[in-house]
Figure 1 (tube, rainbow, N blue to C red):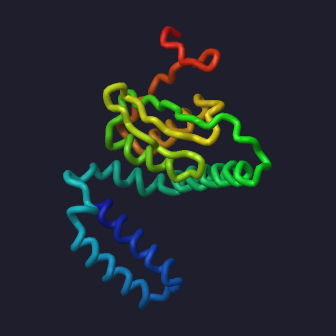
Figure 2 (figure 1 turned 45 degrees about the vertical axis):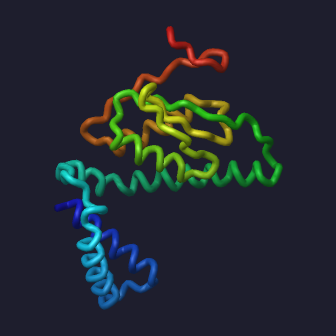
Figure 3 (figure 1 turned 180 degrees about the vertical axis):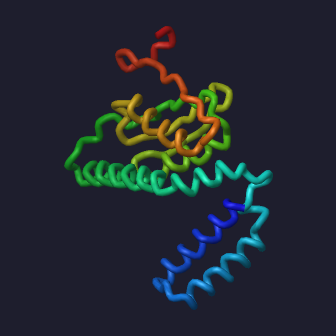
Length: 180
């Protein structure tokens, strides 16, 4: 139920921001429109089975933290891409970085891949389920361990209750050391 209320409140807020009107009348129009659209698209919007109430509550409470992380990552990515595009920063080491999935579920990998892709300068290329890796192309792959740590912060926020930290591989001389 918390998930449905969160969807309705978010939809009304987006409607009001889109119309730039927070009057009571406009909020009611947004609520009616959001309720009708949620009912029409309920099979596409509302997951089955419904998530546990504590997970839904966790997402609502930690949404500002998630949005803050996304905002900072988007600003950083925009800054790096802008400097590179303008020729003020050399294109150092673009490439594909392998992010280990480990014990993360498809329910966590999908959103985290989307969150990583939102930032300019990075794009999720593929998920290799056999090797349990997510392949992400980045404009600066000079420090892949830092990029992996950044992805783990999204897993910690998204996979509430069943988050299991992933052992990150040790990198020596630019190559992953499987024996470390």
